[in-house]
Image (tube, rainbow, N blue to C red; front, top):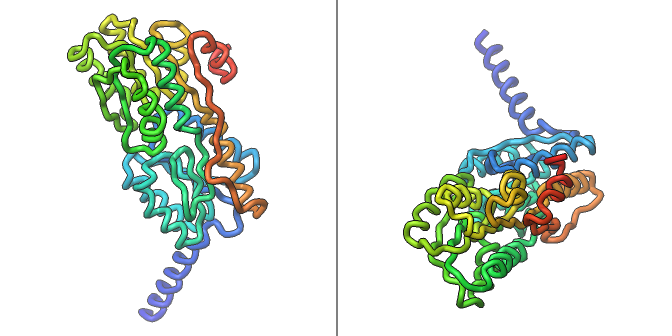
Length: 317
């Protein structure tokens, strides 16, 4: 009886291990690992990615972390452990994701970077916007609105590669060319809590520097926090620029002219669909080599084109 029970447990263990290793054998399945929920830009990207995969008849295994690198890496490792051959990595710090990139190479999996800045071995492509151009457009918009002079506040995100590029390679070199632009406040914002962090910081900046004329916010959530603080203080004269093209910013603030605001809108939906297409092409063996970066188009949205942009996105009728 004991021998039979022992043999049964051994066989059961083998079957369990085997089932884990081949859980997706014979299926076309794309792994999607999202760094954090709650960001409209990323949510729309993922929704469009999933919708495109459904159109193509391909399954997906979706996991979302809590915004921490540890949880994100754990989720990616789990997807690799399931035997998935393609995993789309949505967000996160590219440098901190290197261990998962190395693991993917070791296990024969391929990663697709979705606006994450992940490149190199094991990565098929980085689907993103040209973040250097985004940062430059943001800087030029603010400089033009201020006629090249005035005190400004900067909200950066130092932990996320595309955001670092927007500031370090895009906006900062432009501002350095204009001595009349004085950066009197420089605040690091950590995703995904950009709005409340920026609102609190903006309140402090207004007290310390009441002559502030402009705000450069690396993406639209900290821009929203700055706007909320400015409106509460009655400072509609301050010009704000952000990026990503969040619906709330465009529909509730830019289109209504409540404050002078612009945003460089990325096409996150296009990014999601491109990620899906690349995944399926690779899984089916139709294509195995891709450019290091695939850029989606961007649009500067201001009051003059905000309504038409919102209608084109289906946000308003």
